Image (cartoon, rainbow, N blue to C red):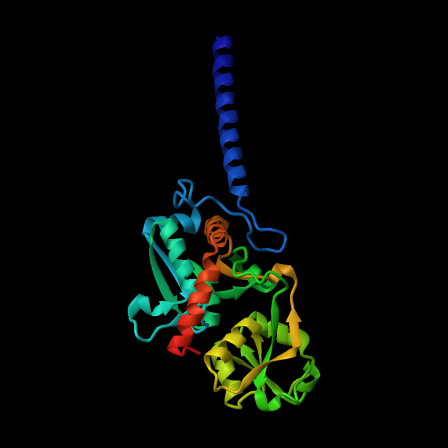
Length: 309
């Protein structure tokens, strides 16, 4: 009887050990999905077979729903903008919109674009209302603390470069940040540009914040502000597409960022790291094939023909 009991106990112990091993393996699997030291996600997975069988959290919900919801502010050509000749979901065009379509395609689900103001894009995705934010997001430590961020895409190849745009008539009067001491500056609320203005412009008369960069450009153009803190690439594109705007980017003022800030990011609810691994897998494919830069160039021309600001 003692031997029988011992065998039963041994069998029970083995089962416990086996269960513990399975739980340990599960824990290890979860630990594979991690943020890096800067608080964003740079790991990726193979997306060639769609959403994996071990999908969990929001990635599993997307699979079960058969739909991916993407929040964006569609006023930032050529990444995302509206073609007024189209309707419904088709009206949202741009390089980021092509990227969103590719993610949905790799997931094997339907795509729904949700247009919002920029601050609402971030807040709604951080709160879990929508699956992804794809809206020319830049990395900031604060943003990484509020959302999971992907690895960068649309990389500059060097330190990211930001600066200011002014009216041509002020070219001789605004050549350094010190010249802004008695001027009104403006930029998009909640953006990296806002943080850069706070860090790099010591004095100004007034600091205005608007919901979109398009509004910031127009404010300078119309004399409602003297300078806008901008992404230089997008500002130059705005000038190119609006030859009568009489504005210029100030060459002498450039805000350079560390390499960690380079590239545009995708955001999702904090904790949804596995979903970011999937998104990063799509980014890997997109960058390897040079798709994003191709889309960017095509939609820059597209926006120019439409006269999109």
